Length: 229
Image (cartoon, rainbow, N blue to C red; front, side, top):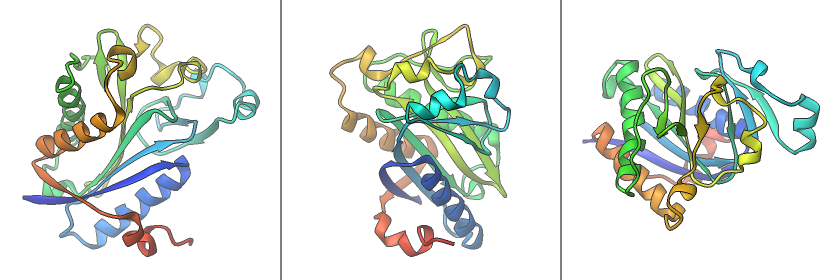
């Protein structure tokens, strides 16, 4: 069975996690026998804008956003504007799809399936919408998706709302969608603990991608991915 390194980054600035992703993409490109890594992280408050744009969906000025202590970052993932912050579990699979299935649509389906299974195991009915990417509970998005693929190596990923600051979400039109809302796990099932969600994501990821997650310490990869240029 394919082995994928699991790295928990705890809470980290968005830009630092992006640097780690880029370095891992380059590392996997050089070492094609490696199936990949799976990063789990929470971010300090930040709005990120994807390749499809999204500045028009920022409802407050950049100056006001900065005064609230929220960063704004343009990035190279797919999709529109979204929010990351404490209480949101972000997953960045850095996978060489040559070890899995060289099909981007398949990859996105499996990523969504990972979250759908996780929520189902906790007693929540979640699914897809034909018009939009991500995972939904009723008319509310609970997990956003935005990926990039370079030489069949994936990066960026998903953002699952556990217990987020809804006031921050109201500063944007998430993903440019105006007719639908945003959901959090804690609002649906108060008794679900964050540790349960992390464990559920790990188990369902292994099921969806038919792999074994092997925990790696970030310190063991420090020279590879954290050394300044």
